[in-house]
Amino acid sequence: MSGTFAEKASMIAASERLYRVGLFVVVIGFLNAVLLYFALHVTLKRVNNFLGQLAMIFGLLDAGLAAWYRCAVS
Amino acid sequence: MRLHLYTSALTTEAGTVTAQALTDLVRSIAGATENVGGIAFGIALLLFFFLFFKSRYIPRILSELGLFASVVWTALYFASLIFPEKRAVFLYMCFPPMGLAGVITGFWLMLFGIKNQGGDDPIRVSSEVAAY
Image (cartoon, rainbow over all chains, first blue to last red; front, side, top):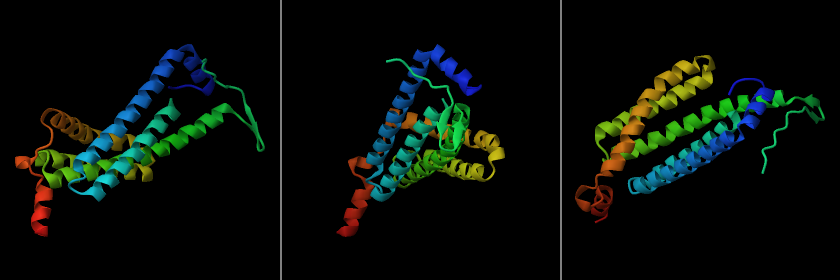
């Protein structure tokens, strides 16, 4: 979204439903990412539990930061 | 519940801070956050593809592609921290292999699942043999 803060605020206020749908999509994406990383950890922990857990932690970190980033730039 | 948007200037101890300045600050923080998140994503996928490579749950070529894409992704996200002016070029280089590896692996796991040799887990069996 481009423009000054006031322009962006007026655009959001003009299409509030769309803005809320965007927030909903961000939350769904975050939950899906958490589920994906947990499923990969469960699948691969038999190979190496420590590396599987480490990968899940990095993945969850990414999911959280990505959700925050998408909320911040919208 | 209505959406409330505050567009007026905010007063702090240091003086008046405009909403525009706060927005710009949040945006610049978000830019750095996106870089850190990208590095975390690259390391996570690097470890996951390494474990897939070791376990042979998916074809080796697929896990090798994933490993390559993860290494390129992580390296270029680190590079974009150092050379932010070339960020667009780096993203253009690291997205295609990661997109390819991610989509193909996702479809492979969805359609064929993991390859479990003869119903026995090769890692567990080998560790049991070693313990025996």
